[in-house]
Length: 480
Image 1 (cartoon, rainbow, N blue to C red):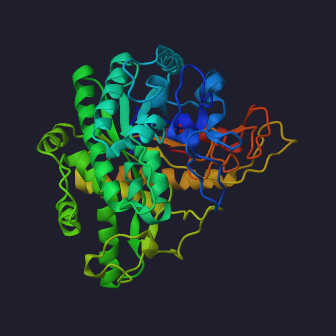
Image 2 (image 1 turned 120 degrees about the vertical axis):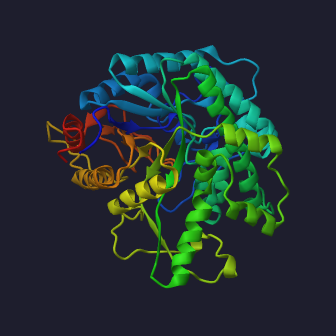
Image 3 (image 1 turned 90 degrees about the horizontal axis):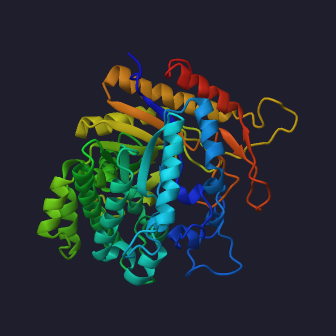
């Protein structure tokens, strides 16, 4: 009983939230580079290119580009078995449609992965994590244009060939299904995920389905290419997972929750089964959408099924039937209601460790594929302690959150037979928040001396949770 002996304990970041050095090493401008700072309750804006005087926190990140050896050494001190990061597409192909890759960018990731292996840390690498080339948005409107399929596959093949033997575990698109949340952050998600820029009057729902289809085809073709280039490679999808519960046992609430799960998680059906679920095809028919699924796409999807399911988990939702969409029960975040049984973080994220076990079983019941929890963490305002020689933040709240979630995933392994490969918490070091662009929303075991006002020297220091997680890894999750 318990976690497998080769369980991949570690942490996860994304290049655009950490690296900084946005215009160094031949790097091009990414979608993340034109996203302004926001805050808790104030949305980030997407500007028309890089504009002088705007605050772009991703330009700086936490300067991981120049600090990665120091940061990896701290992770190795914790005993990390794995570290998940992403490759910034714009470091490899600065514009996305370039003829030749940028050697300086390729060399940076060679050095990064070599250092990880020197420290005994397994790389887990995402190819596209909210950082597509901005040029693809300007020239093609991103994945609304089928040509972006070929650009992505070309980029993926370069990475598979260059890092063969260095990277075993890959993921294609990060949290591809976030795009389903069209009302709250639709334009934001489409820009982040697919470099799709939405204008007033656009049919955002249609744009989401069409661009997501092109991403799914690109993912499938990349999976097939990875297996041909490196038979040892394992390629997974990455799903943003939140269990959606019925608000009551009223049958209409129960059906509403089921339909919400259908419409938020159909993406993993395509990734894992190689074809669209019938309810989505029926929706396309009902909406009168043009048939953008070509015969060759169906073949590609069937041949590019993923090897494992990677997913993030932070919270769960509850939903109540309002009759908004009649008997179709179409999904809307406006139908979400507060779950009164759960507490929430400062950002309103409901804390539900039992929901993680529920999600693991939801995936397992449907797909029976190995799984990896590649994001799970607690963002908080951390209070810095000046007079403590051992740690600079007493983040017991983070320890409590993570311990409860690790206990839940252990139950899923011990009692439910879930095949769990690893757990990379988000994020082992403080980074820029993707949703708000804040520094002060902190997740890490490692404190970074930098804040929303761009004050600080980027020095690193250990929090109380650093020592706790080190012990968790030492005991393979037996002692929390």
